Image (cartoon, rainbow, N blue to C red; front, top):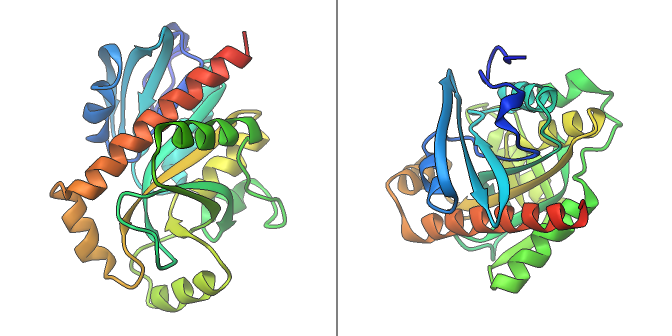
Length: 246
């Protein structure tokens, strides 16, 4: 059945999906796929399909925030997608995490609204273990700079207490901040979907988010390389998952 927001149905014939936030990132994903084809573009949900080492891969943008990400998760599940990896960006919450370094989330602080709509706050937001391990192993094999840890998923860039909250979660050891990972993990777990989240660091700890993100959008090379690395890592992780599921 055609899904109302993503405008896709079961005919995509793909079990695995990449979930970038930015619709423009699909152009860079397409470069790493064989025979990529455009599928649909409705609101923030742009989608393409291609092959990676013989495995059908769907990529669909989710926009900004957990609410739209959860819509994509629900509708993708309805058309047969069983594993999803977020390939997003984040701001570092610790020093020593360079631009373009990858953060693999082993858990997410649920400081946003979408995950709370799904389950009591005591429910943990964690990835699928095998998919996380595949991501880490792939990054190690390819020599990509990366860290594994907890991330802080928040609701908005522009709240008055943003700096204080960042300091608080930094002191508790969170590695980076994004807006979607907690929703992805929570909704995915409750719906029986394997999920993982790879975040490309685009803001050094202590720098202004607006200025750094602006530099990223302009093609700052370290961040652009981090984006290429996270795409490659996610594709390889899904390929490895496909082998274990045969």
